[in-house]
Image (cartoon, rainbow, N blue to C red; front, side, top):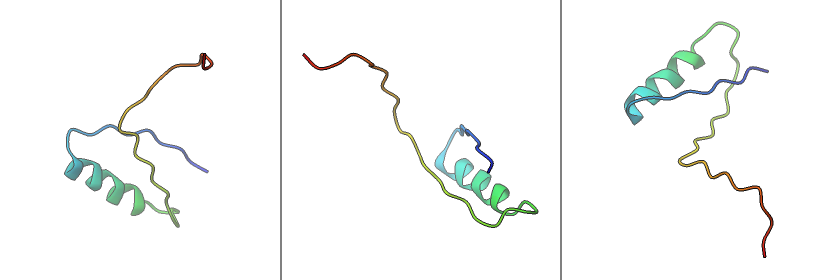
Length: 46
């Protein structure tokens, strides 16, 4: 298993990166998750 964190200046550039990763030798499949915002808050409710 390989995990990669990517950042791109545009959706088109991100798509290009996905295509390049998918074409690498040995890559059989990929799963993509896109995080639009990161919220950090570990406190409980109340």
